[in-house]
Image (cartoon, rainbow, N blue to C red; front, side):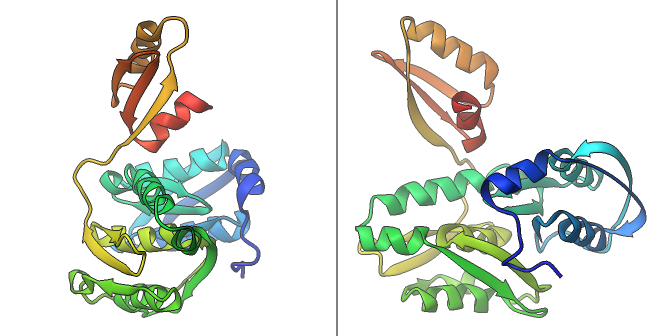
Amino acid sequence: AVGAGNWLVSAALQKQLRREISVVWAGTPLRRALDGLSQTQRVAVLIDRRVDPDQKVDLKLDDDPLVAAMHDVARSRDLGVSIVNAVAYFGPPRVTGKIRTIAALRTEEVRRLPPAVTRKFLLPGRIAWDDFATPGELLQRLADENRLTLQGLDRVPHDLWAGADLPPLPLVERLTLIAIQFDLTFEVSPDGQTMRLVPMPDEVALVRSYPGGSNPQATAKNYAEHLPGTKVKVAGRQVHVKGLLEDHERITT
């Protein structure tokens, strides 16, 4: 079986996501379909706790890029999928649409903390668990391993999870992938010693500034037209954009 040491990451993962695949599923349970895809393509997959893993997938894909195939599987079951670093996370669309932005917001916040704290939260580390692990135990373990006091664990109800073995991820992303399955995120104290689980906000957005060029108003209009979910305003020669991480990536790539 593919494990943490064999998952594709970084440039190799991006190349694999563009690779075309063909596959047929006929009444295949979702978890079995995604496990098969994960193992053959060496891409880590995590299914949200709220998703029925036994629901059946009926789908035929012919020479589809792997990332498109994942979206096809998700849509066929009214789900969403988001590539969080090196993990394909399948879950409710309202959550998959926010998860990367939430991780980016937490990353921005810890970058403003003392350097030792920043390193702790951004250093990649492995995370794996066996069948019947409880998410409360996983969150407490992450806190203990990183010498953090964890508050708000009472917000996490008892649950039993299927096993997983994920590629090394920054602590911010490991925490996010677990907490978001309960509509939670986390706050870190200014000294970096305490972490508190808090409800995920209804609206999440990153605010970033871009050069307006010779005509900032025209640049802003162009962004607003091509990124309909964003809020755009001009300040001097700069254009400020408030939107999801994916919106900002469309500007910079």
